[in-house]
Length: 209
Image (cartoon, rainbow, N blue to C red; front, side, top):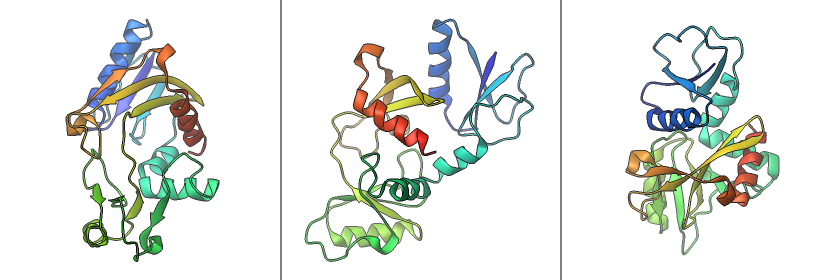
């Protein structure tokens, strides 16, 4: 039996949805918070953003990989270095002083090195706004082009294969971040309706982690 191990204050809604979905398929998984004991009888563990030591030998994802992708700026840099220009996996991204300061018009997102739950993302449409956002973000900030969204998906990849896709429905479509923390929700996408381009891109990103 498998256990899905999550951190406190992380992934509660997502893990419950995954657990319910798998239960309906006849493959139940137990969701456990990392500050609580894992019930006996579990022989496979899947980490949900959690790097705690565990007493189970069979762990699907490593702590090193989780640390790597949790460093969002660092992982973007890794993708840029591996592909040359982002490879269509991520928008064109600039780190620290790489972004030119003489543009007449801009439409970019400025982020701090570490961020979560849709917070501290700054959409900037002038260089004055960029400079202010950079000051707020501090060292390690990164900048990427703004892409108007008509849809956003979360693709779950396990051992190189997409196994589930959730479509994000925002609380406010005008928000930069569409996630549960900002009042949105996830809706399961039936297999026949999977967006294949998003699947391909997600697997490419997974293979670089």
